[in-house]
Image (cartoon, rainbow, N blue to C red):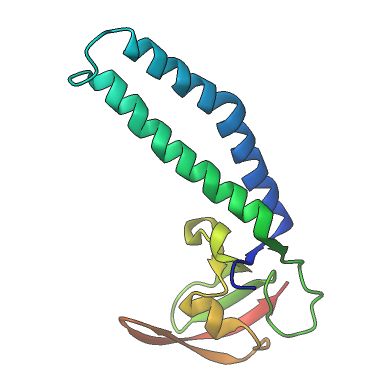
Length: 154
């Protein structure tokens, strides 16, 4: 299905927690801000009112996004180490002359390279999937290609 959102169990839990905070804490807080700003009078030049309405719009968009993730999620279960990189695996690899790096292959909704999570749709994710420890893998990016050697799959 085109709307499927691939996500790990931990990622889904984080999405549920964020949605809960937005709907039970942030939404009532913003409604209160809008009400208070409305009471200040003329809305055409009321910065607080417009700022709160803008914040509300962005928050509601995020709530819709989170609800869509929950509704359309497909869990990525950590694959048993079959010796081949798959979604959900953590992969260690090294580029020639560089320190070893470790990333978990996740869905795009929870990708965060700084936190060690890359999407299976990314150049790195696409390159690693289906390969084994010891394989030299070419990663093709818009700015060029580079090679890494897979050193471990967890």
